[in-house]
Each structure stands twice: as structure tokens, then as C-alpha cells.
Amino acid sequence: MDIEDFSLDPAVVHLNHGSFGAVPRRVQERQDELRREAERAPDAFFATVTERVAKAREEVAAFLGAESGGVAFVSNVTEGVAVALNSLTLRPGDQIVISDHTYGAVEIAVRRTAERTGAEVVVVDLPGRDDGEWSGEDAARAYLGAVTPRTKAAVFDHITSHTARLLPVGELVAGFRALGVTTIVDAAHAPGMLEVDLGELDADFWTGNLHKWAFGPRPAGVLAVAPAWRERVEPLIPSFYQPDGFPRSLEFQGTRDYTAWLAAPEGLRVLEELGPSAVRAGNAELAATGRRIVADTAGLRPWRADPELAMCVLRLPDGVAETQPRAEALSAEILRRHGVRAGIKGWPGAGLLRLSAQVYNREQDYERLAAALRDLFA
Image 1 (tube, rainbow, N blue to C red):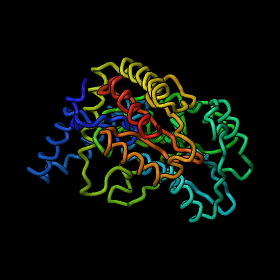
Image 2: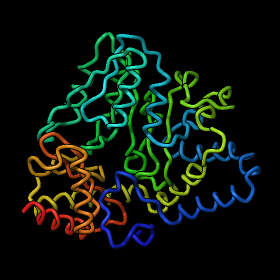
Image 3: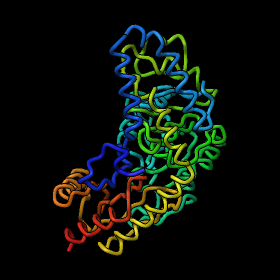
Image 4: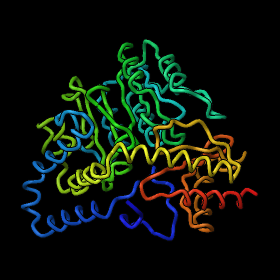
């Protein structure tokens, strides 16, 4: 596939796929067909939408190695995490463990839950905050070492957002379970970038986006729930389907736009036709190449990366983009002056440049970004 297979502006180099993804034209067309169908005959469309969503859910569940009845569509991971937190029974003094790498919106959801219930938020500082030098084993030790008799839940990433690192989710799920701690996995970047088998992982709650790396329309995400928790899932918004229980009680809210969910399997078909293994390997190799190009040309320091990921980070010069507003301003300047959309994340001491690689990217995209950065920081 090339950039012509997407609706991306060909005058811009797109190296921030990890934030919002990009929808293939073919998937856009499928969603447009569904929207036209709904407008031609709203009564007929909504009379059958529950069964059609269930069928789409079956395809997505199979892709993720999950039971269809154990997965529900959600808009995105932030919603999925919020539903998981809403389903917990927490009391004053209980603890929820997160880390200093937790995605901002997820941390807000955790802190709101703590305020509502009287629970305490425990933030684990992962090693390597200043130089990126940490391993999955280091992260597991830090997380599991934070557990106390009051720890009731742990929220952790499958792939970290700002730092683009793969956490040992299997080890963490098993370790927390042995300690009696409920697990909530933020897997925003996992579907499509990694081969996922949720039956084997068996987390209490696992939630991922389909609109980042699985070619799905926006917004489309899933929440997988272990059998022991399904009867306890509490939707954020009640509906007529509340008595049906999970997953229908979570999915159906009157006249919401269901077309992204219904079109999500088309994105999976695109991925399947390209060959998921080939896409994953090609993107990971290109991300590593881009990392080397930017490091060599712009003089940025690459942080440790996981070779199976299609994302990686490099540290910006000291004092640059230390906060998210400054990071966004720098990203806007690079776009305005050089026509490159770069993912820049605020980080203490110096911001992080997060590179993504997707099937529409080429080596010259990273060369263009590298030249822009060299000029900016010369």
C-alpha cells in the first residue's frame, strides 16, 4: 500500500501514525456506505444494528483470540479503562497502582475514580526516566514491588504511549493475579501492531484501539473482560439494554453512530490481505531505520527500543519541549516550516520525539524530518 491508498495529504510527511492512525480509502468507503444506508432507512437500520454489531464483534474477537461474548465495542481505550474502573468496588484506603508512563487521560480517569471512592493512587516510577535505559523485567519488578495488602487494582500499558516500549503484560497479569490484584491493561497500540491472544493473556480487563494500527475507522475500540467480571461490568451510560448484561449493555446507546464498529472488520480484512506478519515486520524494520536516520542526521539520542514495535523514541535537546504545550508548539512549527507531522511528547528535562512507521511511509520521510530537526537545532 502507498499513501494514495489513504486520504492523507500527499504534501505532508506523516510520521505520527501512533496518535490517530490513518484509515484506508477502502474502509472509509465501507463506512460511508453504512452511513448512507442508515440515512436512507433509519428505522430498518436501527432495527437490525444490534445483530450486525454482534457479527462485527465476532470478527474482531477472533482477530484478538478472544470469545465474542467476552468483548465489547467501545469508542476508545480511555472509555474502556473508565468502564473497567467503574466496575470495581473500591473503598477508602484501597490502592490503585499506575506508573509515571501512564497515558494522561487514563491517569485522569484513575484519579477521578480515587476521588469518588476514597481510594489512593500509587504511582510507580519506572527506571530510566532520564535516559530510557530500562527493560521489561525492570518494569515488572517496579510494578509488582509496589503492591501492598491494600492494592486492589493495577492499570498498566501493553505498549507505553510517550516512550513506545513493550511491557511484559503476561508476566504482569500473572504476577498481579497471584497477589490478588485486578488487572486493567491499556493496550491502545496493540491491535494490529502486535499479534494478540487474549485467551492466553487472561487479563481481568484489556482494552485496545482498532483505529490506530488495525486500519479501523475512528472511533473504534474494544474492551475484553474476563468471565468473572462480566456480570459486574457497569456502563458509564445506562440504556434500555442494561438488563441484557455485557456486552450489549455496554455497546448500545440509542442513536449513537455505530458505523465505525460495523466497518472495523473491513480494516481487519485489509490487514489480512496484506499479511499481518509482513506488515508488522516491515513497519518495525522501517521504524528502526527511521530512528537511525534521525539520530545520525539530527544528532538526537535514541532511547532504548523494542525491535517488534512500529514506534520508537529519541530524546530532544535539553530544555526543549519539556511540557506538552511546548511539545505541541514544536510539532506545529515543524509542520508549518517543513511539512512534516511529527509526534512530540512532553517529558521532564527534554521532550521525546516519537517516530511511527506504517505501510505508507518510506525512508525519505525520515530523511526529511531529520533535515528539518538538524536545521531547527543547529
